[in-house]
Image 1 (cartoon, rainbow, N blue to C red):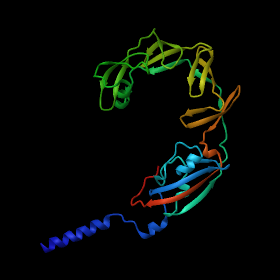
Image 2: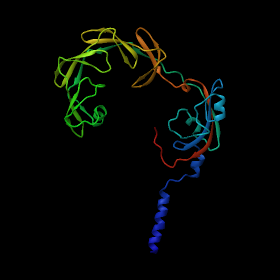
Image 3: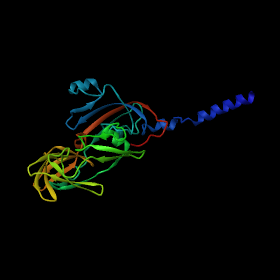
Image 4: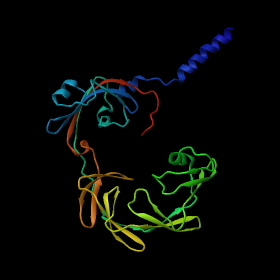
Length: 290
């Protein structure tokens, strides 16, 4: 029994040593990534106008109705609306700091051709295999061999012909010689042929027709046997969403559309952050970078 008691004590010591402890040196380091910081802050623009604050009295004086009351808690290194990390890092509990920001130069504009050529003949697989998650998203839970349909995405119904762990094989119930209305487009498409597992559709666009694209209103200006020529007409000063991010339309000429990466208001102006670190809880583990 004596030996068992000794082993119990020893095991407890080993477990205790295995738990990460916050050392005195860590506390003296100040705020680091992964710590939980509680801060009070005020952001002022270059003209002295209060842009954001945790001070209720100051918010009322500045007619700021939506704000964080009293203090704000967040993980250092996490994504935040304001650049607090650049101020908080290295600070110790009770410390105050002021930091001024000057905006970086604007990114150069990029030229995007205002007109675009679209292939008039488009091909679509007749029997695609969809991942189960995508199939469920498009068609819901359909029984095997059932006919499924989603008019928001497809102008024809599909028949589910095979279901495996790898995916759902479906077959388009479309027929050559028929005309279909393609979702999101103002023109019809004529199914000319089904060959080698592909359906070939001729897009019957007409000059003067309009459609909406990521570059705003887009007009068909010419149609040939092989191509549809469209002209994009975005609004100057508008924001557009692309696969690479959000862009700001700077100018539109007869040939090109000039865009540049969009930035937040604070990224384009001079401002100052007054911040006080009210409390700091040190992290005892590693924090994944975002």
